[in-house]
Image (cartoon, rainbow, N blue to C red; front, side, top):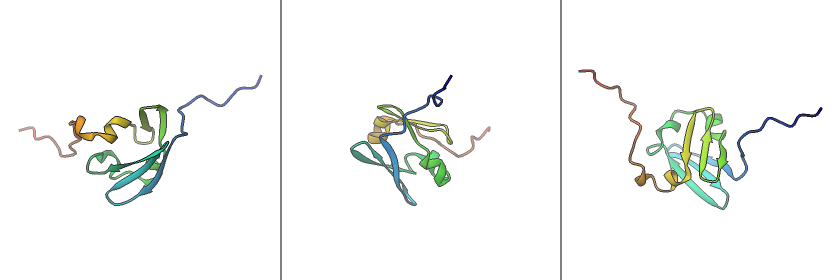
Length: 94
């Protein structure tokens, strides 16, 4: 009995094409999108290999398994529609 490879997320259609000090560019099918570290801080201290390991499990969903980060493409194109922000500062208990 021959088994196929383990099923998983589709990776075609998305590729990280450039990483700089302020963020990184992804090529998403027929367009390029910029993810600024100021808007998407989960990536700011990530290793290059972690940023490069991106999956596209559905047409409007990107997933970075090494970072456990899920983003809708709409949130990248229109971050103003998603006002919740990550705050890395510790919470003062009082």
